[in-house]
Image (cartoon, rainbow, N blue to C red; front, side, top):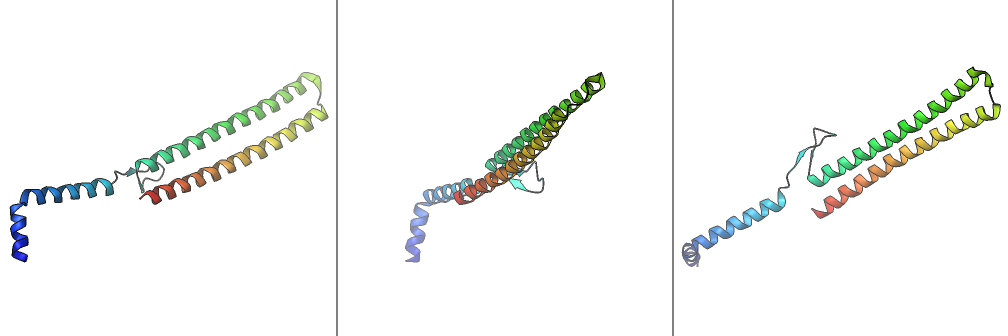
Length: 137
């Protein structure tokens, strides 16, 4: 029986070799995804989908930082305008001062909540994406 198998292999040698090469190539193509260093954690390797996810998270963080800077500049401008009005002799309006201070506290709380929500959402999205990627593999 073993001799018959060897005869069949010798007779179809090219077909068997090409089949083995195709199977090996298919396994290699599907199992070896290209990876690169992560820009956020250079010690970790990431695939294309993980890299796109990191880029999206970074872009979201930059957008929230930019919005935070805009809010801070608006608050600063309101404080400077109030100080300018006081130095020009218009006096201090107690209601205006209370309104400005409460606006500053309110805006600070809103910014803090938005930042925390963004961080939680980005981490949740990142975990969901990683679970999805893991399930596909």
